[in-house]
Amino acid sequence: MSFLQRIFEPPDVQVHPPMPQINTALTQVAVDAIMNGKFPSIPVQRLVLKTGERCLYCDYAVKITEKLRVIGYRGRGHGCYVRLFRGVGLHTGDGARAAVRDNVQEYVKGKLYITNKRVIFSADKGSFYKPITGLVSFAEDNGNLVLQFGNMSCKLYLQTLHCAVRVLEYIL
Image (cartoon, rainbow, N blue to C red; front, side, top):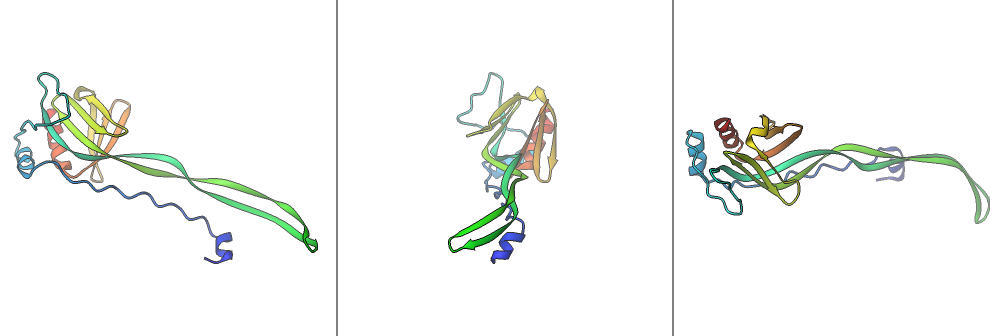
């Protein structure tokens, strides 16, 4: 990149981080059973189920959140430099620096559990659990599952999206 290009072109914009790759934890037998309308109890470890509660869906998921972040800075300046004699000069002018902001998607890998009483997302950060009675709506959006709980909205990427939607339709 030449000197003039660095001065007059806008700053390089950071590319959004790529979506992490996930595999499904559901077996083909479980997927077929869910799609045929049979909803077997899935045995899960490391999840404490309440009495009368059974897990109907369990799979890896990526929680997608959009945040407005500073992705770079753009500076501009103008002025004049006059050399008075060797080693001494006079510089006058002004400069400004402005933050460049953009919506950046953050991805958190975790595991989504849907039971007959709760929806649980377990991850290192951004975990949540909500009662199924608090679920206001759910929808598919560009291959993602969007869950709306009161004033909280959550967008999840799933390999087996069609199974999760089928389970939620069955529960509600």
